[in-house]
Image (cartoon, rainbow, N blue to C red; front, side, top):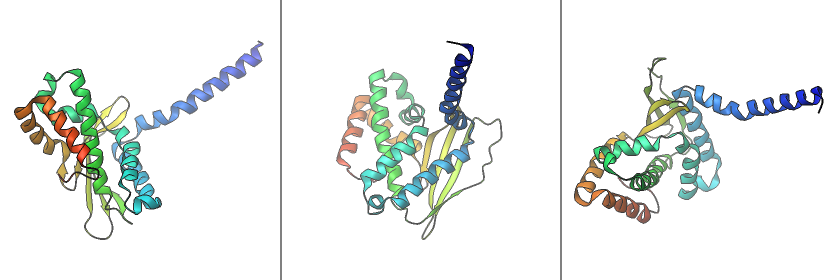
Length: 211
């Protein structure tokens, strides 16, 4: 292989590497409010354009939230915060199960709020975060006809970009709400009892949890 051919191959390989890695670089550099605005607008645009979702197909809406929103969530921190001090005593298997069931619960709760969206638009409120802040709250409203739908996000800065670790849906912070419920379940039935309760709740609620 001559030098010219080798040079072309190296140039092509470098270009491909940059092309593949560039979305991740942009994601890492994206500000928290820009991230929320982009992801939220993608979700709202999908809701408005998908006839099945507009007709009330919750399974498609849940799948949309799972694919668009949930990759930007730190489920380990969120679940650990909701479980509280009992998280440290849980086994690795229990932690995995807790994260799985809590994720299902959160997806359905968040999807329930979005199911009210018709022709609304997103309003991301001005952020007060400083350039050195590692944790911020991004406040948004889905506005249109009727009362605005409040959707706020507590976020942390990680090596891979900003991640959500708590959601405020219609005025209720998810982690704080579930922490009290989970503590009661664990006191009464232990960690395995909480897992079983969450699994049963997710199984019986084909639609959206009412809590």
